[in-house]
Amino acid sequence: MIPNTIKFFDMFAGIGGFRAGLERAGGFVCLGHCEIDKYADQSYRAIHRPKEGEWICKDARQIQSGQMPAFDLHCAGSTCQAFSVLGQRKRCADPTGHLFFEIDRVVEPRRPAYPLLQNVFGFISHVQG
Image (cartoon, rainbow, N blue to C red; front, side, top):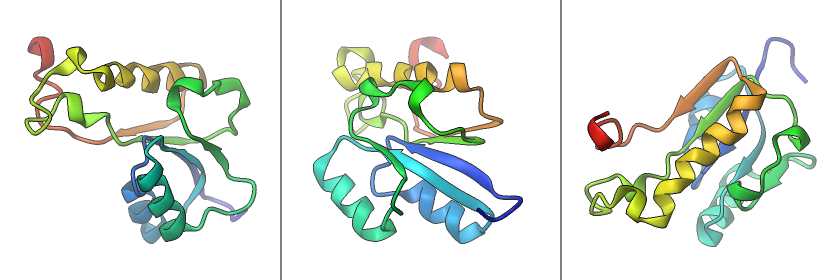
């Protein structure tokens, strides 16, 4: 691995927007990703061509932090559907609204130096912030 790189994990990766930006910026190495949507994951793999040995998980609810490689940066494309205006702001009444807690469950024991979350309009104002 190249010295002075920041290793990151891409959770709720979608088609890999975080990965695309970080790799283009330089100095970042993706150790793996997690995406449950079949079509988004197919696109992610076609676009980014994960290297052999990258840690890949389909369902965030199945991640066991202790089995993951060490990472410096944790990226999470928020489970935005439940909080966005387009998702009718059902919040925790939408089953995907609870997936946000999976981010905390994975990140808390690992304590990466840098957590990076997707900004979703309406998330911070959920239950008066």
